[in-house]
Each structure stands twice: as C-alpha cells, then as structure tokens.
Image 1 (spheres, rainbow, N blue to C red):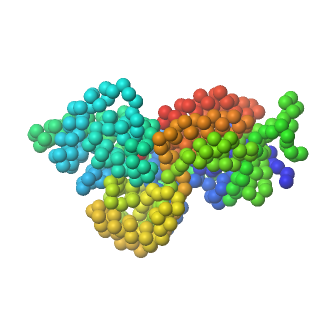
Image 2 (cartoon, rainbow, N blue to C red):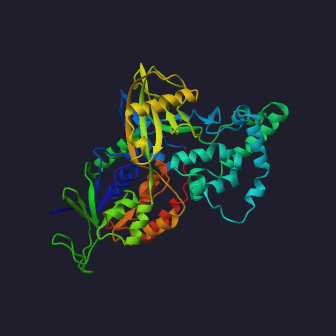
Length: 499
C-alpha cells in the first residue's frame, strides 16, 4: 500500500504530542500526528457530563510553569486562563485539614498526640538523616525525611492506594518525584515549631498567621482543563499539522537494509532512511523522524523487528496503575466550598473527590446542579475496574457518609476508565527501564518523550517544556541530534510533580 511521507511523525495526541507537533510544524517541517482515540487531548482532555464541562480527574496548571510556557498558553487562551485561589482539604486521621498543608492549620487542628509525634520526629531528624546509606524504599526515604508520624498517617496508606503496593516495595525514586523534598520537611518543621508553641501557650505564633503556602494558587481555563489541549490542537492545525485520529498503530518499522519497493533509499548509505508507521487497517506513513509519546512498553510491542526477549520481558514488567473515574450529578448549585477533598487513608478506594465547577469562574456551568468527580485507582480487570455504575455510586455514597462530606443529592452517574495513569516504581523498575531505554535509543529515527514515553511522573507544564526541547534538537533535515536530545532528556528526570 502506498505511503504518505512527512518530515516528522508524532505518535499520541496528548499534551506532549500536540505541543510537539505544533513546535515542530512552526519550525517549518511537515508533520503528521497519529492518535488512537477519536479525539485528541488524552488524559488532559475535557468533556461534558450533565451539561457540565469535566476533566479526567483533578487537573491544574501550576504557577511554577515557566514564563515561556505561560506566554504560549496565554497567547492561545487569553483571559480564559484564570488565576484561582486553591481551596482543598485532606482527611488526616479523623480530621479535615487544609491542603496544601498549612503549618498553623495543622498545629490548630490535629490531636495533641499527633503534634507531639511531629515534634519528636523533627527533633530526631538529624539522627535519621545522618546515615550515609541510601534509602532502600519509598517508606525508608520518607520516614527519614519526614519522620514516622507523618509517613505512617499520610504517605503510607496513600501510596498503597495510588500504586497498589506498600511503601516498602516501592523504589525510593517514587518519593523524590512525588514528594517535594524541599518543601514538605520544611512544613513538618514549621508544624513542629507551631505545635511546640501551641502546646505550651495555646497560641499560634503571629509569624505563622496568613502565611501563603506553596501552591496556594493555580491556573485553570474557563472551559475546563481540556481547553489547553483544544487550543494546542487548533494551533497545530493552523500550523499545517495533519492530525489523524481514530487510528491504532500496529507497527513501527525502523530504517532497514532490505527496504520495500516504496521506501526511500539514502544514496550515500544504500539503506532505507525512513521509519514506516503502519496502522491496523494497513495505512502507512513514513518519515525520517518519529517522536513517540506512547507508553514505552507499548513501543517495544510495536517495533518490527521486536526487541530481544530480555528487553521484551523488561517492557512487560513495567506497569501503570489504572483509574476509574465516577461522575455524579448533584442537584444543587454547589456541593461544597472546596475544589478537592483528598482521602489518603484506608476505608475507601477513593483517593480524591473534586468539583470541577469550583476550579473556575464560568457562566457556562448549570445553575441548578453540579457534577462531582470521584477518583479510584485500580488494576485493569480487578473488581473496581469491572464494577457497574451503580456499584461505583454506592462506594462514593459510603465515603460521603463515612468521612463527614456534604450530603449528596445524586440524580445521575457516569464512569470513565483509564488504563495508564500512574507509572509504578516498584523495586527493580530502574534497571528494567534503563535497559529498555538503551534499546529504544538504538532504534534509528525513533525517540520517546512525554509522560508515558519516559515512564515518568510529570505535570502538563513538563510535557510542554519537553515538546519545545525536542523540537530544538531537530536539524535542518528534520533529523534528531541524538546527543543533544539525550542531554535534554536527562534533565527531565529531575522533575518533581506538583500536586
């Protein structure tokens, strides 16, 4: 079957794929963007439930987003990109506390025994962190930095819900990328100082009052988080990107010494110089450069010839945690004053409940009802994954009752299922990922990027930074400077997720 040829092919139309296609097209290259779903946006998209624009869970654009990225998004969204005051709360034991954590609120709200534990852990912190041995697990890393009180009551149960494993079985890298080490210990220390004063004098130091915590504001579009990817798609089309949706990639065939009759031959090397991408229906596209944002284990299954069996086993061992999202229509203008409620403890599979209309100021939202989004991490095929909408609704209603949440007047329920949400950094993941990336680096003309492509925990702004970086690594012929890209990609490993 004849092939259509481009300078660059991008696989996957989530934020990283859309932004990459746009950046590359703006540099003058012809670009095809191929997406399996019928719409673009991936997990960053938005859609309607009961007349309300909702997201795939709780999403925010964080103020730490670099100025260059913000300028790009402001140019695309204008005044629709709103700055909002963050108002979340977290269930800690049997209490609700502000989230992001505020030292004064913790010192005021938590039981005396918990506060004493934080004080003790803070005093003993130098002893815990003095060890020259490297942490052996997520649990070990956070017990050293935060102390057992904060870890055991907050991070331990949350880890098991998010990733399906106890903290002792999770690699310490998970702690680095998911817990901001330069802020959380400081919060714990400030809690200890506030707690000591409170326990002694029943007062909060004046210096703690009104202190704005890290992440106290966020950016959010008027029509849902998906407005970001919708604006990127529109700009990409205007830049000439050919966006092909509803198409599943069946194989990625790198340049070969035995090219087919319609494959371009490099006259200098005598080998096929184009990567061939073929869909399940037999359609083919070719380009000298393919930029894949697909999950890197999936790329290993698509490449022809396949990787060595040992690398294929590594790819199978790397797994993502899935998610069931439940959307409940609540009859009433507003269900809660909060944008999100975090439930890290045991007793429910729910990790977060959010109210999309509280994330924005919009006249488009219905006046007589709102929609609640309930997040439940799970494994593909388990009981939660297979649960009916009625069963999922019952789980949500139990949580509302058990955790002192506002009364829910539910008149409708819908659910969505996501297969690849959180990379699971189980013990042994790092050497497996390294071997898989070494193999992928050897595929001529193909490279991986984006959250799933790098098996990384990233925010949307990280994906947009990555898109500009990979476009900057293309030479005038649309081929990737491998050394320059490897250097840029290494810097992305230092990212810490903003929550």
